Amino acid sequence: MGSTGDSWRSPLLDDVLRGVRLRSSVLFRLEFSAPWGVSIDDRGTAFYVVAHGSCWLHMKAEHQPVRLSAGDFIVVTRGDAHILRDRPETAVVDFFELVKRHAHGKDRVVRAGGEGRVTRFVCGSMQFENGDTNPLVVILPPLLHIKATERDARPWLGLTVKHVLAELDSGDIGMGEVVTRLVDILFFQAVRSYFEENADTAQFGWLAAVRDQRIGPALALLHGQLDQPWTITSLARRVAMSRSAFAHSFTKLVGEPPIRYLTRVRIHAAATRLRSKDEGLKAVAAATGYESVAAFTRAFRREVGITPGGYRDGRAGASLKPRL
Image (cartoon, rainbow, N blue to C red; front, top):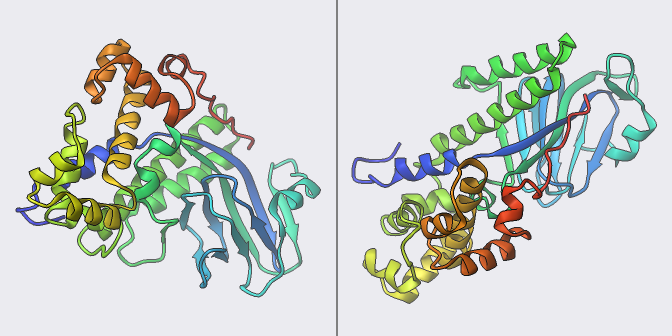
């Protein structure tokens, strides 16, 4: 992935993958018989595992629907409103209203629709740890679709999906926790596959920025040296660009200005340290580029909505509990 001259690329992608932290919750097991169609409003990041059959997914912001098949894994990464249905022309109803009217049976599967062909899938929600500060918010496409039907599909997809479905059918103790962990693995693998498949061809977005011979090294500097007092001027100088040209190119490729991106990466790194390491606030602040605890606290609270101490104590929000 990348040429030998792009030495910054692998460490940069590794750093982003290390930062993948999720709180997943499997909410529903569904069995819909044609005709059926549901709309899902903006309710946060959603995922689907198609267990049987096929259907169409239509992102309301896009023109063309996407066909989903058995074994596919799909993530609506930014929680955009979308539609699922058996055929592109089928009328739709609100998903959550439909689920309320169709209580699940003893096997904990919600059934709805008509008398036609059956589509079964598992769906649920994901929350990125550290919320909007996670760099993945600007890196990933609105729809992450890993197809099971492609000839070069990776074996991990089929194996993990089978494990998810077998665990759901087992009813064993701890089933919910096992399934949510498997979904987290699916997501991590899906992100890695997205990087591998697009790193050398992306024409726009973050991956295209990584490929760029000047913006790519700048991203590597930001991720690899968070403790440095970076400014647009100092970054531009390091990659031999004028301040204005660098700011314009960075924003165009990455999707947000350099300092805004830097703040996101710093706060994400700080939040990870707060939850996983026994460090004082002064050490965390210094490691992530803040001159004082007061400056760090102000920035953290502005981005996350809670103080660093409150976040460390676990008051940033409990994980969703599975309702299988």
